[in-house]
Length: 246
Image (cartoon, rainbow, N blue to C red; front, side, top):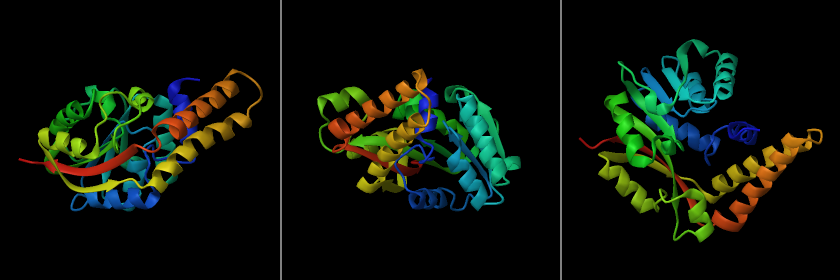
């Protein structure tokens, strides 16, 4: 199984690929789209586009575009849009997010858990700037550390993860200001991890013996061990609504 296939299976029971409850997702979208619900929404690294289809279903005048490198995820996104009857208002692009350009800027842009695809928080915000219309807003989701991470956790996530204050400072240094935010609760963080490991395990146990079954079980076990034995007590996730500071 490819990495993106494992991820897709792992998110079967938690379609938002971030530690956020349905209520938090709804509230963040409403805040992001305040005064922009008749405009255009872009999701960079959209996956199966759960943010977009939910936004389109709630706002009949909204149009949306999603960009991702996983063609299977984009096909799933189209199916979800069709099920909700919003497929005519969404465009899906199989493309590296770093290569996406537009001549018609967007009123709001999402980049939730996808800044790594640009090389980090600063490069992500720099790339988003030209895609955003004047007065627009960005929904940015980023991991952060509460306290000093363990050596194994630090190695797992790399050097780009800051503490919460450092994350907000990096946003400000890049020329943006938070106008709203949500720090995921322990319940949201745990629900996400249990769903990730549990969905993958459940899928594997329904498969006949073979390489895919063993790989899925191994991936779930390794992830569970890294979470419970490494980063659970220090890992956090913040989702910010940003606007340009000038």
